Image (cartoon, rainbow, N blue to C red):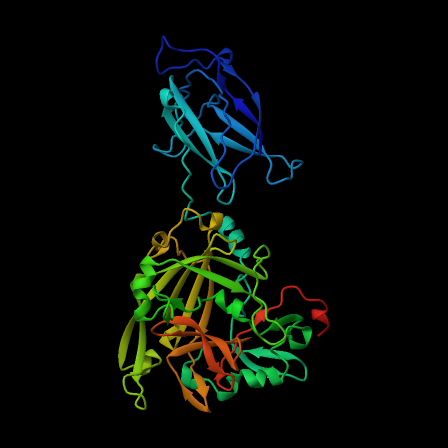
Length: 467
């Protein structure tokens, strides 16, 4: 809500007889002319103050103390006691930095305030006769200042949620956990680092209470729910005729990526029977939220290394570069997810190699978008190297280490994460699968299959330091 505008160096005399020059005498300028305003901004369509501030022409040169400036006083939300100010300097955006914009006769200079993340402005120079021209919604910037982007990222539920590494061992007596410190290749992981849902549940680690917490240095952790895994990757996509489900990155889903936005509903909690808690109320995004998502395949490819699996013809085992017999190229995938919610973010799923090419991991990069994603499309962030500048995003790395089914090691080209949520009406549980062909969250794995596990931090817990 704008409360007032103060015009500094308003010109009060015309130099019509001496074009393109202005006297610097103080009698030509008015200092700190204040205009009272009371107009509230509208996030969706903007709002206009139907008033005018008149001034004669001003051609003050760069560095002059007579450059026109407007100080806008405003407050945010309902906090009318916290008045802030924003200075609008008339600087020519089409010239070199710092060059002033001359104020000419018979032009309208319209100031459009924007707030993608912090208050900013666009300046429109219009013909005076076209002053009633419609205000256009300003473009949302893709590359924000680092402190602003960091602040946006911290507001996401996924920020600092997942532990950096998978679980290495669990001491159930002391309720503590040890994390793996490096990403090994699949066949280097000992079988003890694979856990079945049945086993985890027997240890009391699949519940909702403090009894299911594990601790490291006073910080409490839990196994993730299905909703928390959804913060990393989408559930299966439906075909256009809604007859079939496709994992997000399988070849059958490729035609859907560029043409078919889809709705995602995320329910973050489990009930006492380990099923997700469905909700029709999305006002509290820590419980449930929804938004529109769209995926797109990148033109860029990541290089992986592999050897053939002799026991499974046609299947490759991802391995270290040292032992590889061939290289594989895999396209990364980008997406905008949860548009319309405060969890709206850009995603990039790709593969990376550990230092020295030892082993491979799935990389999930997440970068919060302002204004709930309004004005930004998936085409804007796919193959946009400047947008994905290092240090501007959250990254979760999941090593490719396979799983065990009936005590047999398999799927050595897959990264898996297990969660506590069971499929409705069945003994099956949900997991995230990130393999060298696609990534998705699946809902039909027997609770006796063994997977790696990654924990999430319990952000609001009492007495966690007592453990």
